[in-house]
Image (cartoon, rainbow, N blue to C red):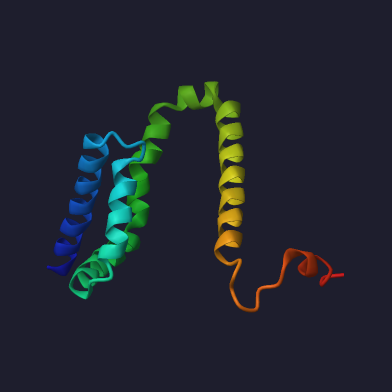
Length: 127
């Protein structure tokens, strides 16, 4: 029962995000906005437990969520063959951009952390 309540909460926050994104004409996807609204709501303990149960269930069955994507690739194999090199280049470039952005954000978030050393002193330690 808790998993069903958790799923309802997750879908409710996604719906709320979709409605806000559409009504306010925001440049964010509704699902991302819903997740941003869900994060502080999880501080409330009665909401956290059902969402945890649902999330554990979804993660345990995550491989099933990739089946539609795999079927889509197989159905449109002609497009994949036709534009394969472009797709590969886009995948590599977007992955590199994601890694760089993640590293920059991590460095920015940990800049005032105790025990963190400036980059200039870290570079010489390995030599």
